[in-house]
Image (cartoon, rainbow, N blue to C red; front, side):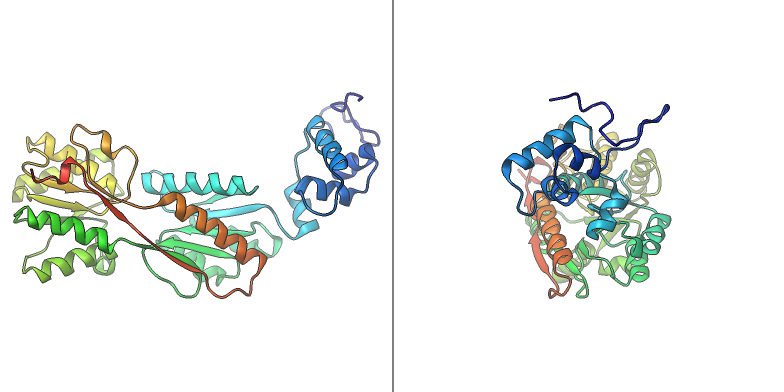
Length: 347
């Protein structure tokens, strides 16, 4: 077989930069129609195995890279899925985006990260130009509402969150049973001050599932709620200082439930820095199930989410919506699981 890394027959040579290889170029080399080349590359249509193998070999030799704009015009699909998440410096979002990208890549989709208002506006304005085939949204935040409001869900969309929106395909994360279990263990250990660390407190915080569950349990057992606000828009050192200052001024709660694992890590550091012991002086639980929580000197308990299953379902829901826009709303509920480690052991 001739060296196909050189310019293919009919291709124009440029002195500075070679012309990108097209499906028409490969069709000429393979002696087939360009539609056959497209089917061979996508694995669709009736293409003889020998022809498919030949086309794939030519594509590899020529370092063929699909042109997204041309593909969108030809098929109505870009092969790109947008992922809208919260800040990627938060481990939960970074981990979820990584897993989603892995699943999407496995289904031959590229991932476009959306994490600024400008990203969302550009996406919505470009909808008719097929910028992406669909969007997976991780968590409710102001950016999420911007997207849902501006797009009016005109794009195939799947939402992953603890809330339940009935106008869009969604995966609901049910944390209530696991949060209740963690609190019951704290109360059973005769801990008197059971506190909750919330991120970025505001009026809407009372309806956030973990906070609402905490308040319900405290009311049921006749305890006064104790909430500690942690600002997530500051450095790790400042977050640790916030917890340290609270404990120095008001004493140390003997059981602490945190909204997420990062808050639990900062709280652990504050406690140890002040000379308190976990779990002897304070029981401690986070939420998210980050993989390194078990590697601290005192392994930290957490509420673990089945993230692999969540990302697999999100990818499947989105594909089904893209293939059949008239489907009824798709919905799945997955529960968190309390992982009890030494930080929650009363013994």
